Length: 81
Image 1 (cartoon, rainbow, N blue to C red):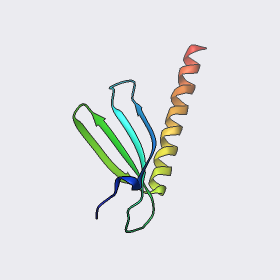
Image 2: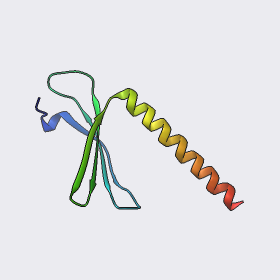
Image 3: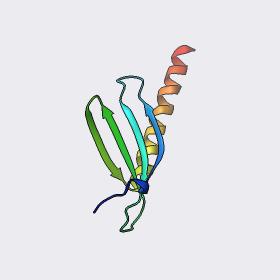
């Protein structure tokens, strides 16, 4: 199954401050149909890691990341006080 470039819409692209990995998030829709997928593309020097996840997995992953980030921010704030 081939993917046409116009079927991938960029959501965000940024560089991680520690490690310098380039992270790109794209919405992918295949010409054959089906649900849209979230493509996560991570570039670390010359190496690429690319995978696609469904909306349910993206929601779980996103919620877990938010929970972790909020816990770390709260712990840092408590350490300052």
